[in-house]
Length: 256
Ligand code: COA
View 1 (tube, rainbow, N blue to C red):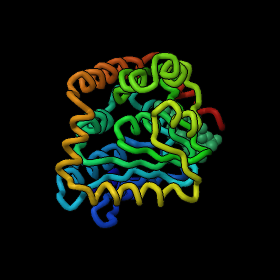
View 2: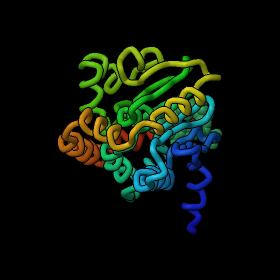
View 3: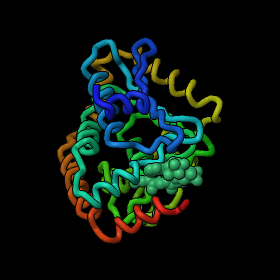
View 4: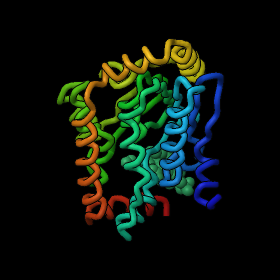
């Protein structure tokens, strides 16, 4: 096993409870910032769960206070400087619209960048009152990703989508629920139980009927997949821009 894989295994924990597969971000010292290796581990776990008949539902969780602070900004800076991006992020983004089994997620605290957009591909997301959903892409001189430029306006209407994606406003758990971006807000102490209870109910349903219903609701994903690719192209160009490099360097330097 390579050092990167070894680290990713510590930062992405995969476990099972009955027919529910749980993937958990576990890099609390960095507020669960997601590295390339972690993207690969997350995508690998989801793909394994899809392929395994014993798994009937995916669960995605973070840590108390931090679902994730989004993409690791050191990785962004490395790409901006070297041009070496890898395919890990895009591999995950391409997989998400293809997941046939139900996905339940639970957010407590920070849900930044992909920490917000990931839930657009989940089926039921629970959050806590202290959760903060935020997509600071524009402030980092980047563009919306994970199909969010298409999915968020379709869910919320243009103005709330603009507040989230262009103004980079914080959305509380309640605001995210009111906007239809997540399912419901529960007290912190109840979060994981609510997620797991729901996942177990879903795991007990007839799997074929559930998968077909999900597919019918999602409809043809061709346009979404094309949008994810278009966003990724623009994202890659912006990552190398001077304005983005300055934003990443400002974050790295802020405590020095
Ligand atoms: N990438 C890399 N490291 C990150 C990170 C990220 N996205 N988010 C947090 N960290 C690191 C910090 O550098 C810090 O590391 P250090 O202790 O070695 O200095 C550690 O996590 C704790 O973060 P800190 O900033 O001290 O916590 P905070 O509670 O004051 O603020 C955030 C938390 C998430 C608001 C702040 O860290 C932040 O704005 N992060 C960047 C979020 C972002 O822009 N993500 C990209 C989205 S596309």
